[in-house]
Image (cartoon, rainbow, N blue to C red; front, side, top):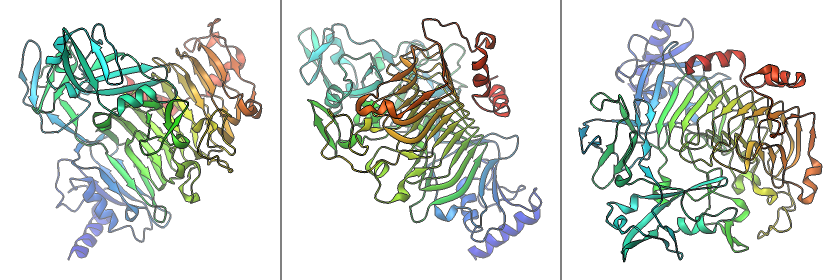
Length: 617
């Protein structure tokens, strides 16, 4: 009976759908899943449409399109696509917006029932056990924050001593987080407890996060930069605090925000969409067009803290290595901060003209043997961590036992990536781990606290023969890593490095044969070096035809060990020293003639720029 019903559904769609010929299903957030999925009687959920596709795609002779009408699709669990949901016969399964509509796939829940608390502070009951971000009328609110306590100093390995004993009376001390911006890292360590000590107090920090942050290799934390997440810190409009024990959220409205009518949304999910294939059976030939993915959280920092090593990667407690009195991971196999949309063992997946926003952690991961996937014309903004992460940094990434695990031939093109890494400032616009053939081309990346694009990992230690002599590992690999043939070209990267140091518009690590950095327009990056930065172990990289200005150092090489600098071709770049600072992107005539062509060709194509400009207005 079920198969007969689905056959009738297909017949109805083909004969009565609005599109003549192609097979189509329709979804509307206000309809009913008992409907047949036609334009006149759409399904209510994407999962119901997915199941209808699964019953129809075994012998595809044309694309199957699922049209989503406008509105907010509130998800109670992530949408999961598996191998049976793939396109077949050389055709695609397409999930797209009804032309002119703007569907939002949201993992958030609306918070209502606001009442005035004290002064201009309001409160509302919540049923979500924990969340780390809140949006009011689409604008990100700030977790209640304030300056570090007066007279703070380290107290052995336990934590801190402070002069203000009243902190010991604060409610929910284990919710408080101490936050640290140190060079290229942005760490968060939770408080364990606070006890009085004479007129002052002793703050005990949660372990092992505090020990990791104090002893990790690279740079370490000392005194915090600021404190976050206490009701006692909620004193400015736009700030909020969640009392998890009481199930109550507090918020101080901004000017003109009316809590009786405001749309307040908190994320209830960590993931929005998971394409979950295997090496034997990948998900393949699926396309997403014109969809918005929004309202996902990242709760791991609440559970274990966030001792940032670099690019929002953390120490793996199961694979630690003590080296010269500091702690790192064996072969730099650190833990990635995950994203809300994940393509795992996925082939020939496309995201076209999609939007990724209101994310707590990263936005999009391409991992575990995914290949030939494309992100084109998408926008990423208001993202807590990195926008896009292609590949990873584990053993199965740098030296996989099965070559099918290599992440290869994926492309990020014509995208607009801006205002990301807003919660975890060590994040980047596009992170590329150990990958083969990744293309990052014609994107605009701007307004970031740290680097725009980061390509490669390992500081040379996983390369054949290892890294510099002073880096010891349990063993050295005799074969190269999977990193090769990556291209970062014709991108416009500007106003990055706004809060951090020791990064750049484009940053690289380790040997990457066949990798090219070409035709990029890079400027106005405050933190140093700020331009193209070939860091430790970078080798076999061609740097050519780039335009770089208004940065502390246009070209920076920290790859002299093992003569890696000599393996890199660096030629025909146009660079202005920071001291001169005469060139301006806002005044093309200020650029030398040989630079204008580079500037004109970099960034998204004209049709994409027009769409992004319209959205910005």
